[in-house]
Image (cartoon, rainbow, N blue to C red; front, side, top):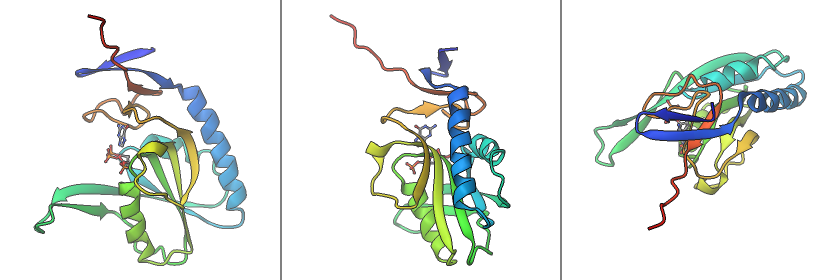
Length: 185
Ligand SMILES: O=P(O)(O)OC[C@H]1O[C@H](OP(=O)(O)OP(=O)(O)O)[C@H](O)[C@@H]1O
Ligand SMILES: Nc1nc2[nH]cnc2c(=O)[nH]1
């Protein structure tokens, strides 16, 4: 299935599931080496990370724990407008080795916010593992970004956990918005 339609948008295939699995296996091997004799706590950022987290964890052989958080945006009472709240953040991460698992890092703003909250509990270490990264969209460098599956251009992508209007998360492959070729006139 090279082209798909979700609501008003057409998408074309970008990364096949086979390649995602191969890359995930390599990331898993690297994490197993880096965390030998440690017990990292993997924290997945919902909703998008659920599929990557599941497949990544199958490759992890070191002793580890798993948790999930969700970052919700809502209009707070503050006049500054949007406030982001982190739901489900474990409160016992002092001195723990944390690996945050994301499906995608785009501007990096979501991660920056999560990292700021995590550091308040003084963990031993924090690294980020993201399946996808859009380097050109990053607002500022993220030194915690240690494991990256694929670097992308600034296209909107869906599938393998990522959604368009809530749809497409169940797709096995990753698709990008089809480039519209202007018709000659
Ligand atoms: O780097 P950023 O520009 O902050 O974007 C990255 C965030 O966007 C997506 O989540 P989204 O808010 O779409 O929620 P979802 O995971 O529930 O789809 C993704 O899962 C990241 O958490
Ligand atoms: N589905 C989806 N969510 C995102 N969040 C940040 N960038 C993206 C993207 O390209 N696709």
